[in-house]
Image (cartoon, rainbow, N blue to C red; front, side, top):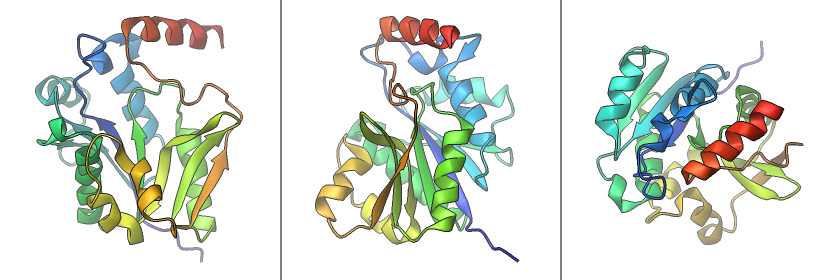
Length: 210
């Protein structure tokens, strides 16, 4: 019988949305919100457990998500990053601690403001991790690489050592020996994210066109 690893997926959603001027993840988007889309993506994936890492707007997001069933014991847990002002690395720390508490052997990280990311993208990364031997798998297109990405538990301590706002990308500069692979996707716009209201409108219109 084939035995798969236990995997956790975490949505990083702790930022202050300063350029947006309001909680961008709760703004209306394509009949929903960016936060709801991200939660649907992680709960629709093959990961064993899922969490949303909140921060600046923890209360607002918790109330929003709890109204949709995301609470203790639900398919998607809420993890409060109280150190969110320290930068994205603090959210990665919160995600790693959650994954360890669940006994996970790998952590898949995605950011909540990339609406083109789907459960199929996450599942492709999970499949590559289960089939391969690398310590990390990064999403890639013809235009670059980035989130979402998955990390083996052998890198958890390194992720916990990260500092500042750069997140997991800094790990590959400090650990040149990490066995990492790229998982290629055909969508050239996969990494487009939302920083401003104009970005939100542009992406919504682009996705409506297909």
